[in-house]
Image 1 (tube, rainbow, N blue to C red):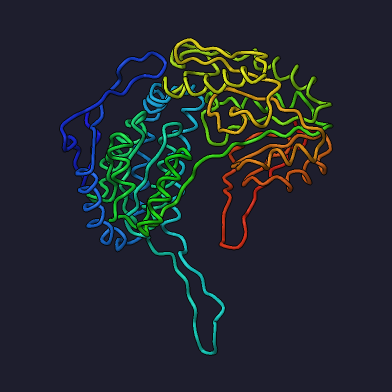
Image 2 (image 1 turned 90 degrees about the vertical axis):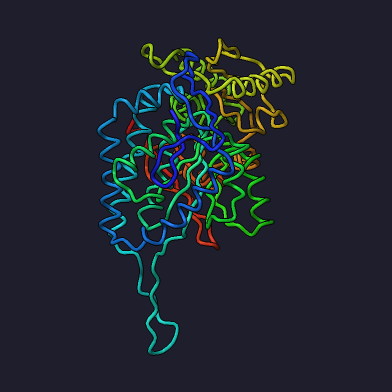
Length: 458
């Protein structure tokens, strides 16, 4: 199978070479993808540039129809796509169903947005003047996506971009090129999207990804992924005067105040820290607990973690599947082993069988350990004691966070603490939820979303 899709045509990569796609749980080969490179990216950008102005000139209902048709095509293949996601990402069924459903929903939402008001009437800046603002397309957008939610994370950018008249060159992760790339190209072809509006160039990050990130023909590059690559892209873009938009994850935290309910926090950790093997940018591996509450929390946490079943998502009813690659597994294990050597203790887990890493709880973790300072991106929870609530909050804020949680049986106290935590999203007595809110910036403020789940409602 060749997943290069340029100017409305599925074709082989310019180099003629392909690589295999594996099922993460078994290692079985489930497909192939084209090893695209700079020549393919050049052609894709040229095609996107030629298509963008005519696409933006189409009446909004026509663009909306294409997005609805893409959603309909994906809906007609829902079960097959869920299984593809399970095999390609290693996620369990509930994760795959959520990913596919959310991606389709994004297409439907964007299809509606395409036909809504695209501007505002502003207060006039002088007498007898009429001031209007309107949303206009950026132009050609390059999109580089990660492997953990490949379909969803692509469509959250692609769908609204297409709705407002932009064209796209997508480079999906080489670990998930089918569910994250080829599937979306098939949907665009089935929806009769104009040639060149959506282009998909698969390949490695070093070849296709680097070529797209450095391409001068883009009006915007959108990158979701790791900090190391993201910072390199930002530095290169600054030198070349290119516009980029980055989402690089965060070292998220659970903060348990002195009066936290340990069982509620432990149950939330199953989702907020260990869902999809902890391989999400909103997973919280740092659990910062006021010292008086550590013993009770550790007991509750290990009790619930011990119930988790690890195995092949396609083979039965399991809670956690495999780590996405040996590289990622080895990185996780190296952080765990380093922590042990520095004095941390394994309460549960700490080992692996193939790509199946046991959910792990470490206690005695200190803020100078790499397992604490780095985003683990695996099924590892670290327990770090704080002297009091103020120190716990300060420790959490010492590292950048996308999403965080704070636990307290006093809900007002919890809300006050949430307001002091510098994350884009903070939950009180809960973990991350599907609420649709995003941290936004207007240039002078940072918008923060705080969600409260009353204990009495549980």
